[in-house]
Image (cartoon, rainbow, N blue to C red):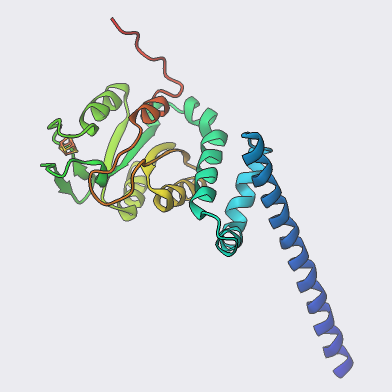
Length: 223
Ligand code: SF4
């Protein structure tokens, strides 16, 4: 019995070491891919890279902390990766199956909109912030646009609307978490990072949002 127990512990120890070595190898591959991607400004095997980053995110983020690297850079790369690997599928999704989710912090501080418990903040199209024009253009194309006060709202809207694709804007943690959750739920994500952080009157590149808005849709020619 004692011999059996000893060999069992030996076996578990060996398996543990193999698993540890395998994880270390994956981390090494992910880090090498990151370094090469940053040097050549191009992602190497982007889909594989994105899977590795999602799988090993806590470990790689801890390494970034240890080596005093900016962890936001890691999230920024991950967002770019997810945009690249999902762009084609997003463009092929009918616009009626896409939704847009914008954070409430993009609004004017004098926003008169009311909050609906079902659909988020109901933009009154008052013109005090750029959401007004963007919303009109998006809805004309067939999108449904939501302004949300937080992640719980996003989950509820996704449950109710069941879109096939979602275009969102947000700060680092919200955007990357939202894009990861979308992929897990089988929803095709596209995301644009906010240019400024904070809780009120944040800014975003509306040009980049428009580029994504028109993915797979021919733009109207000017007069
Ligand atoms: S345009 Fe809409 S979101 Fe912007 S401030 Fe006016 S009501 Fe609020």
